[in-house]
Image 1: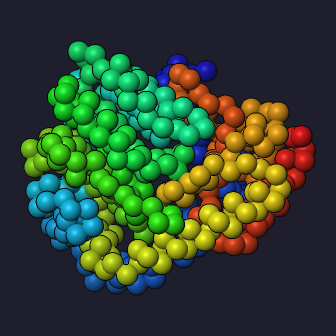
Image 2: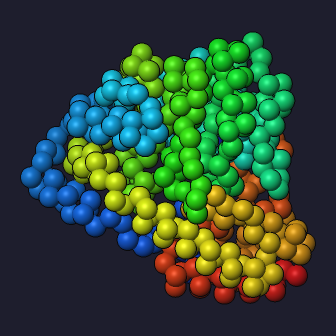
Image 3: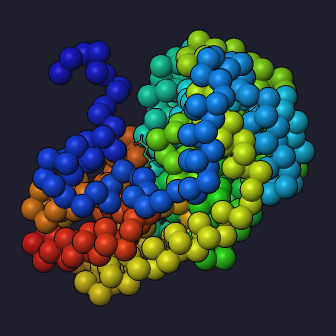
Length: 383
Ligand code: GLN
């Protein structure tokens, strides 16, 4: 192996999407919708591409979008924000990268709650930091407050929380959020709260931003994503929300990463954030899609875990009577049954859970049904 690859594996999303293409499989792996987006938003972006500016916007983001993000969170999450709290980035992943590069000094420890999004650990290391994983316990994936507390050392700088949580689809409850906040306050830590799934809530799920907890506005760096909000994952328009002081520090790092984000897409998102009529239909469409997937899975003998948010549904392979680990099953499913999924073990470095896979239900009915048929075949092959 090329030693330069050390610490930077091929992302599981890329690996499974390439496998899906190679085997002409239904892609329920990487999380992206295959159905429509809010049409007026795309129309507005197309108009702005013709009539707006196509030159560099300000590095910190278009003032209209920074204002729209601040207003949106004031309205929906009771945060008290101004444009000075907001930095626009090229997707939430860039907000995470800029935060690591700006705030993590060589030797600093960063606590990651695993299973965790696969970009965190490589970015922490690139910034010179040390990854400390705290494991959520399957199958209910609750946060272990004592485990979190025990992971803090004198070198800890930051905790990364992802809520709603990818890949499990969990929303942490009030007690779990308070446990994170208490540890951060006691040890004077910052928290990068990756809240990109905040609007992709299923059924009657309700979301609270970590920044809304007492004493947390000043120590939370919240990241959000227009891609997730509007089902436009390829736009890569995201943002970071923090105190003006912290936002200014992260903005310095962002200057030397991407500098800025396409202005027409920013302007279209600013317009979209001002309309709230997409939220309820989006949630009911995703809730219906999840329910369709879960009933199909149960019909063919799978045990599905509860999913409260995100595009994702996990299945417990062992409880479903499948004697393979997640990686073996995912490969069998894509190569021999024609459906791509994501093995959950890819989201942990230290104590991977190897008995679950993640499926994306942000798909048209036909795609879900084709995926379900292939999953039924995969189970028959595996059992
Ligand atoms: N967020 C997406 C997921 O969890 C993947 C993003 C990516 O492909 N890097 O599936």
